[in-house]
Image: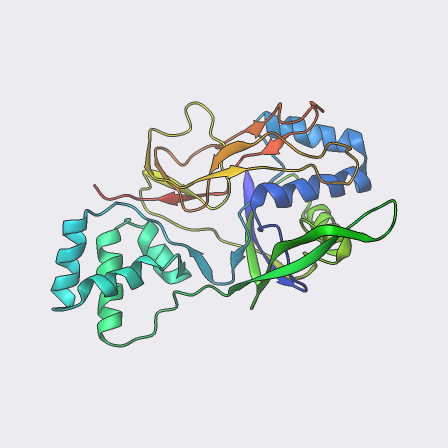
Length: 318
């Protein structure tokens, strides 16, 4: 059994690595290694392999916003009819504005998962555009290209053609993680591990100050209530196992080229793998733990990838 929590953090610097669940849990596992020792970490990893993880995280989401579900797909002719129903002219331009909406507020999200209906969502937003109501289609995340030099470690100087660019991101506002915590696992321990990560930074170039953050709050959360669910949506990266779902309804995939954290490996690069992204919807029972830990991604066989997602119950009306 699990209790649900909502973690709110404030980024204190720009960052390079996206705030994805498997990466964040990787940082937590390194924190556990340094705080509790290898034996305790091995115990938690084995429990996770047996589908009894101590905690499950969503991706880091912009505060008060959640991914827009995209079920069901509407044909082009259906979209045009919807546009013409609201706008007599230039309906396609308005439809493109609605299509750019990637996140929705929590109230809209709750309405959506209690009877997924893309048609109603599109029509509502077209009416908002017609009434000249503001629709925020731009993200609060800003990307900036930064230029760097490659330094020769032997001479301490730069060389010809040593310039390279790196994309850094900054967020206006806070981030939220939704957490499922096993009832026998102390919340104080988890908070201690998150504090460790906040002090050491998250993701690439953390040693130079990237990915710094502070905890704003960690509070109990009632969860997302759905009547008569017949499907589920993931809010984090998902590596499925046999029997997890009956069929895919609307999915997005991501190819990841992961690295080992902790700065202890001479060869940090993992093998690439494909996973489902947040917002993907699957037909089937939302009960039980979905996903698995992916193994054999690195020459060190002890290294795993956490692919157990935070799931939300969904009712898809036939």
